[in-house]
Length: 186
Image (cartoon, rainbow, N blue to C red; front, side, top):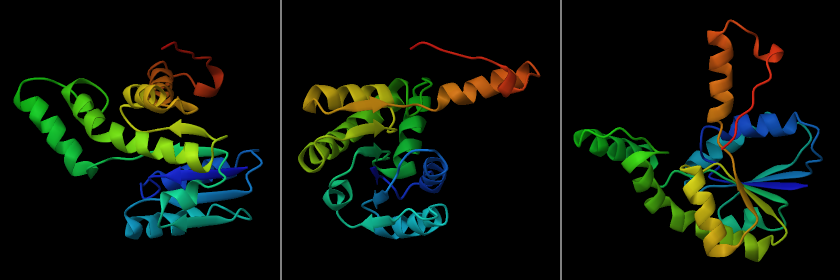
């Protein structure tokens, strides 16, 4: 299977590649894209260290990374960390809590981000119509629903917060997480 990562200039790319390549998934190729080519080059170099025998390529065009993919991971931050800081500071100036997934900060990020993810979803539909999109872009729920509504693309949204919460609960209970069964419903 071919995996493509959009937003691969992010710091999580080497971690994601490491996790995927250590799995039993039949990965034959990993393809990376980010509009910031300098960051992409750094993250691709780090990610290659985890690939072992799996070819990893980076691309200057999203279409080239997506072409023929079976799964396309999208994890982007439009405006970078500066936009997030601005969103959260603005909310706090008005006495409202909120970050990139909730409240005014989340809504601001959604309005800035949705058009870009929808555009990537359309590229997936054109260049890898059988592919599933795995959305890691916050706010995950709004972005995923927007893509489904605007494109009908095959997409699921994933948030890692529940896993972190499970670990914190087990830690608070002084219980090894390997000994706990934790579940949640959204």
